[in-house]
Amino acid sequence: MSPVRLPFHRLVPALLLLWLSGCVAPPLSPTPDLAARQAPDTRVARLDFVPFTEPGQARTLIAAIRRACGELRVVLATPTGQRLLTLVHDEQGARYTQHLMPEAPPFPAIWLAQRLEWGLWPLDSLQQAFAGSDWHARETSNGPGIIRRIEHGPRLVARIDRWPSHDVLTDYSGGYRLTITPLSDKPASRQEAP
Image (cartoon, rainbow, N blue to C red):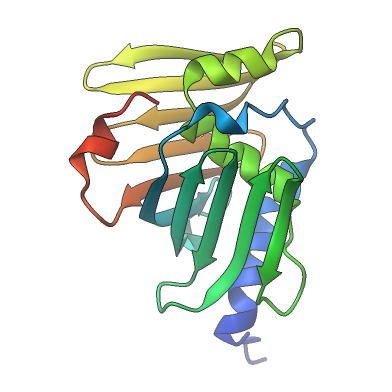
């Protein structure tokens, strides 16, 4: 029996579906104040996804992430430059303004936006948003890095390790690790407080 082969444009969404389909089960966290970041900031980064159960199925994507007053905008593309989707999170909510995958994205826009905001927004913004809920954000120093823990009740949902050269988001509820490595070296943006 010959193996089934998917064309590349169908392979990426299929892999995203496999990796992230279990991630939407946990409750969604409160959203931080989107205006907490006043100065516009755009980053281009390599995203390396590694699922816990099948590390051999690791994949790489390219992301352009723009934070501006009141908005988060993310464009995800393949390493060859094929745009997969655009995510916008602003006062109107989180949504995909376009996606070029054959099927709809396999995870809700708010879920993806929250994972990114957990690492991008200042700790005090997350703590203010989580106040009065079962969600908690905590940070500890780890030598040259910072470890941020996102918890829902007593359960650790995600851990974000911020290092001078890259960030690592370990999503325990989704069962994957995401390494975010900037493609442009902007020392000032790497030194800012998370």
